[in-house]
Length: 152
Image 1 (spheres, helix red, strand yellow):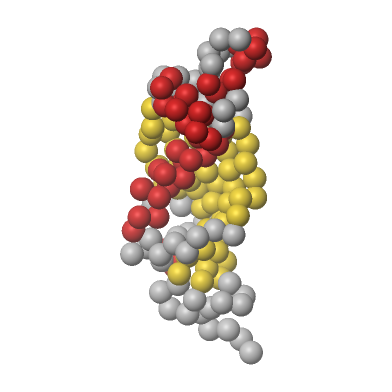
Image 2 (image 1 turned 90 degrees about the vertical axis):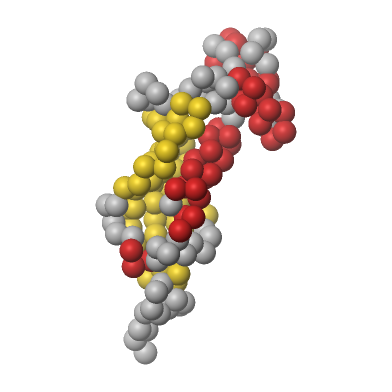
């Protein structure tokens, strides 16, 4: 199991790729984000977005699933205190294939809990054309193999 000590600033992990169909986009949107630009390829959404686009929340969910399947599945992850930054850079469209990555930006031990370390990550999703479609920065807590010695 990957622990806090195994993660280093600068480490990068490819999380795999996911393709989205029109049906995938519409089904997610009907359940979670039923705005016209996500559910209806015609109408007012066409004037602004030039067609159907995926919900940004769907892109985040896909990235999170890839993170779980390809990094956290064999790690001592202990959740996250939150997302510091989230940006949707470009619309995701039916037929897009998104490649997901994560880079470790910072690691630090917890000052109050010697069994935990914090890992700040920068995540991204890139479409098949190489266009950056989403970025995020978040902190993930990982269990330490050995508790840190706290000065006192």
